[in-house]
Image (cartoon, rainbow, N blue to C red; front, top):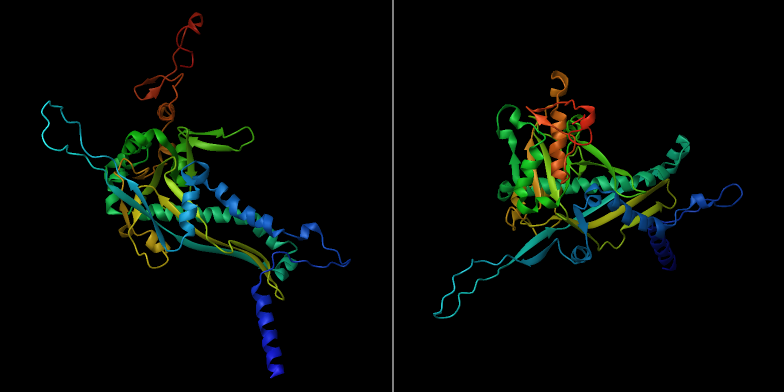
Length: 405
């Protein structure tokens, strides 16, 4: 009996050791000393993991995606979805006054509506074996740590694009889609006025346009038109690329269809809400005791939500990517001009850069991009769809047109 009890205790202890992923693993070298470079302090690494991937996210950097404590708190609660009630706009119009009111006033009402967001329960792991590192002559787990945050950021962006695909597959979202592929000939192609036309679907919110998400082929078109410029966000900040003063987000997860239809999204500031929380062990890292493998695991209970929409799918189980991308699972609760995102469907023609001689079209595009950004275009004369150089006498310089105008 005593022997059986000892075996059971031993088995429990072995299970505990195997299930406990150590955050710091010390390895004794020939001199018995462990170098500081051999140790990853778990508290620092966990904090780094929780923070930096979000800061690397292009949607977050541009102000399109906003994280706040309200959404963090909602995600932390139980359940697979959560509801956010709001007051709709007041109904009614002005009425003419009279000096003979009869009966009670006919009050205009305000109606309570609600958005519904769906939670996503994701995890990602990466690791290596110590033997593989020894054979390669390089520390694989160190390389994994260096690349881990970028990977998580990319995976988050894929989730956002899956969400967008689902929302804009809804029949109720057609008013927020500009589909120029239904037109004929070259009118189907992305051009310098396409963004302006798409902005119009935002109504008076178009002044809040913050970013444009495009496939790399669309980006190449804008680049070849010389319409992309670089700006610094701050003195020490890295340069970012913008079109018409709006952040360009390039993501080849925006895969074109087989017949060459591309998608481009226009976003206003704060159009995507983000929240995360509730994971008991959000980050774990270390070596599995008595085994060759070591790795990193991140768990994320989080939500990405396009404002003005409502999840109409299942509420009794975890949402899959396929369900997230299904249009039948989404409804619109704001009017279309209050929805802060617009989808543009278009084609891209890069052959014009190899089959046509250079003209002033690039300068026209620059003028339109400048107008979009709100600046006053300088030194551009547009005549008959080309930019012409005008000769000005030396004595008129500074008084009239510049010689390059």
